[in-house]
Amino acid sequence: MPRRADVPCAGCGKLIWRSSTSRPPGEARCRGCWRSPCGTRGAYDRGCRCADCRRAKAESTVAYLPPAYRHHWIAPADRIAIYERDDWTCQLCGGPVDLAVHHLHRDAPSLDHIEPQSLALIPNHAPSNLRTAHRGCNSARGNRVAA
Image (cartoon, rainbow, N blue to C red; front, side, top):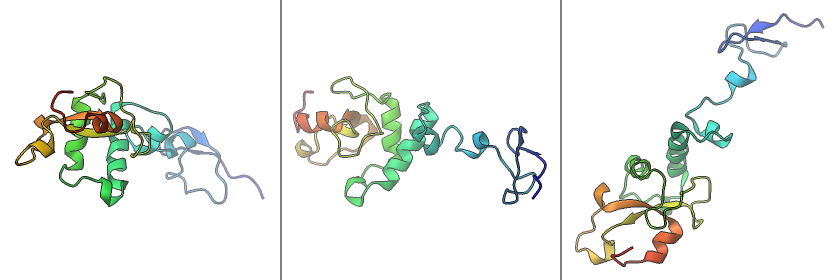
C-alpha cells in the first residue's frame, strides 16, 4: 500500500506523516500539539510547574478527593485562592507545599485556621482566618493559638 502524502498539522502547520487511520487533513495534529497544552493537569503531570498548571492540578486534585477529604465548608475555588495568596508556602514552617504528593502525606497542602475551630464559639472559615500549611505541620500545631 503506498504511503499517503504528508499533511500540515492543524495546530502548528508542521508537516506530519499521515496513515490510513489518521485523522482527515485539517484535523490531524503532531505529537506536540496533540498533547495537553500548558495550563492543564496533563501539562503539570509532564513536568510543567507554571502557575496555570499548578492551578489546574489543584482544581483536579480537589475535585477527585474522596468525599471524606473534600472539606465542603471551604469551597475548592476559595481553597486554591488561599494557596495562591500564600504562594504555595507553609505559613508554619516556611517550606513549599507540594500538590504532587498523596493528600494524606505530611507534605500535602492543607488549610490551617489561625483561630482554631475548637476554641471558637462559631468556627470562622473566612479566608482571613485561613492560611496554607503542610498537613503534618497543621496536625502538630493542634489547637494552639501561637504557631
